[in-house]
Structures are given as structure tokens and as C-alpha cells.
Amino acid sequence: MGLILARRIDQEFVLFAAAGANPAQLAEQLKEGIRIRVHDIENGKAYVDISAPQDITILRSELIRSA
Image (cartoon, rainbow, N blue to C red; front, side, top):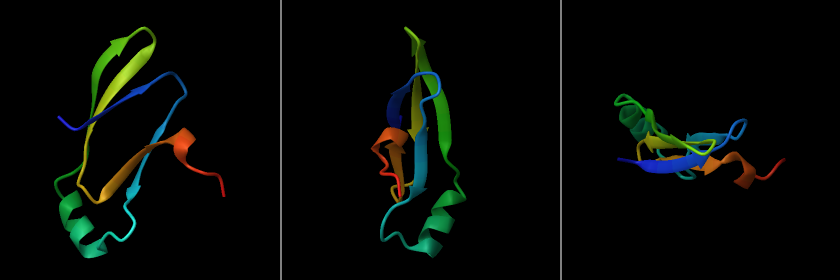
């Protein structure tokens, strides 16, 4: 099991390379893929299980500052 996030309709999460990630190493890790699975749905929330390499940062979109 990876990271589990709860999201409501129209809410998002974003996956991107972590700061300082080695591009070649990250490319190798991504060959295994990123798995995203709906873990549960309850009271209007979907619980999403995300399994990704450690060099991938996962943030709720509301935590990302606008440029």
C-alpha cells in the first residue's frame, strides 16, 4: 500500500519529480510505473491509493502555490 489521499468531486492531486531528483535514476524507476487505485468510496469521498517511486512528490493541488 502507498499513500492514501481522500478527494471529493473536482479535487485533484499532482505528481511531479521531487526537487533534486536524478533524471536518469527517476526514468529508471518509472519503468516500474505508478499505480493509482481507488481504495474506498465513502460519503462523497474517493480514497485513492498511490504507489510511486520515492523521487515522485505527490501533493494535493490546493497545497501548490500559484505562480
